[in-house]
Length: 631
Image (cartoon, rainbow, N blue to C red; front, side):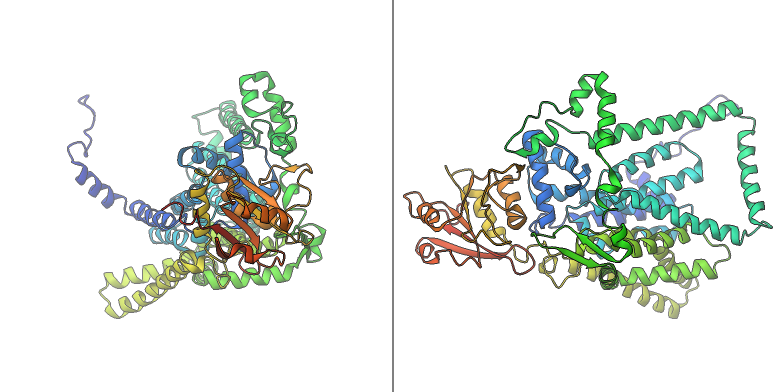
């Protein structure tokens, strides 16, 4: 100002309530998106620890607890990226090792996904931005897997948000968005091995959009004219007088080096071994002193180059997991994968996987698919000027729909793989929902009661269908039911909590073996007990169990610090239950005909549960002296 005084802050004299009301009036879209995200977070936190751990959740949670207890960590593609492991390791230290804590990072990040809609607000109108947030918060597939300790939802969130930050950089030319995108890109890569596939879908979608731009270059006479115009715009920015060519190169070159340094630093932080690394994760224990861990290199900076080189050499990302399933075998549409639970072959043709995924998408995300089709058709054929973002995300979503069945290592991997199709398709779906939203707004402004009623019925029907499907799939018995398309075979079909809570209360107060795992027929593929537990292998305790068959029990035994032993013959079992201090809990396979059930009848209560959706019953015999130990 000319009088030398600074302009007064118009909010300086306002109270907190008035400031909030002012912000709501001036930023209604931001407030609406924040409200949607808050509701989404609450939906994800509700009963978050209630569902018993899935087979896959349990094995990853076990290794997180192992790293927390021992300090040994090394990246292993079979347990996927280390992001969730590092996050949970610190949370275990604060809140203890349990299902709620294990799922907390996924719930928080999945609940915050709707906020990413604000990054695209320059390319979506206000109604579409809020609609996008709502679709990301309420979609049944995204809600279910936001409450599941698996990294697919993390990858989808990080990559979708990273792309949004790159869009913001394009809109504003502010380098800070590139730094944010780089960090999220590393987090996505550190979440699961399929993150690089996002880059491929982006390149493919970009190529299609570029082809469309060259084929019909709108305001330009030809594709060459379009290219020359863009190059001229870059030349004008370089020679705009505010910065010389050298200054322009130094400015962006410096940011480029800083971005590269950030990528390397975060990548090494995520993937570098801790403690003894892989050597510290073996049983029997091996010499772990030769491993160069992260903190050893930090305290001896001259070793950092060696650590960086070792880390990048060790993490061979796409080849480690996905291209081995989508290579030549993918071309001939016959994909061999590792066993889903036991040691049997699991070969599933591509078309069968694609059909199953399509059926699941229509069963759980039908409104989003229909809205996405409406949004794409409107943008492609009815809009005066098609928005590249909407077309791009449609192409990316369809490519993921068709391509992901080539990458699954297990036949039912499409269940969580649906997240990678739904997230990009949410943008054209938001455009489709925006059509009905603007219809309702225009009808209200024109006081057209008939159109208000029709639009309310359409939007209400969509909302009821989405919310009811989401609630039915994420909560209650259907969260474990094999009738729910989202439930994968490794999810226990029954609620094991009563038996698990008994073990949890017994472990801290009982001296000696708390749980005995018995299997007298260890010569078949479903055995609970190993014939030879002394063979070197991963330190997955109890080391005497066939953990592929006993999960998720192993995770709970580790979390409860339970003393566990195994028995493979009936005489050892009888000695354990007939002694003066009988073992409190015995776990057996329901179909093991060597179990002396009569020996348990007098003093043990029997609780039988499915460890998978079906066909995997296990019985927990709990001694009467320890029944209701926690009461």
